[in-house]
Length: 204
Image: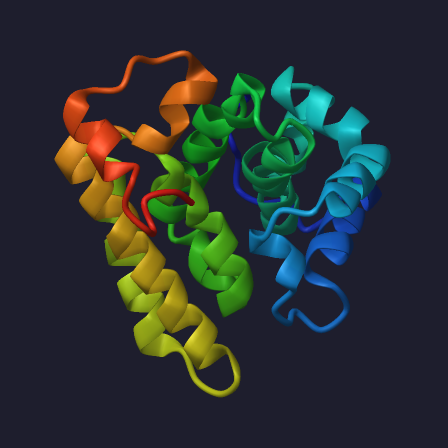
């Protein structure tokens, strides 16, 4: 990946803007499609953005990182759309490392504060998705701060994002990974993980 320079004053690429319009809609309000399985929605994401996802995975959209919105759109492609169009396969997680690297850079430079709260919550998801204890601690720190700032209709939504972050951290703290990914990634589960996966709420 190219290093991210200071953000340009120029426009965000049209394709990146289209990703954000599709994902967040015109008013940045909650969408039920974000966190539920829908074959129809997955197919729509694939039809509209499959080529962009492939390009992002190959590092061909790094120019998007020259703007804050472009960087967020790239994270959406690598962290969210991969999960839609490659659901149930190892490739669903193929963009996680790239997305986390972008998110870490933006947070490290304080650029995340320039995003509206709901959009920030998606920038932080690569930390929550990481099978890494330090990243999980950072996830909870970020979502705690975000929930504390929340006001108005989004306050409940952002409080829920913190709850999910804490639950993800607890699982990785216990197992060092997400046991529910073991089957799709071809990993053997331990006896403790098998018992854990029988419990409600053990899968995301």
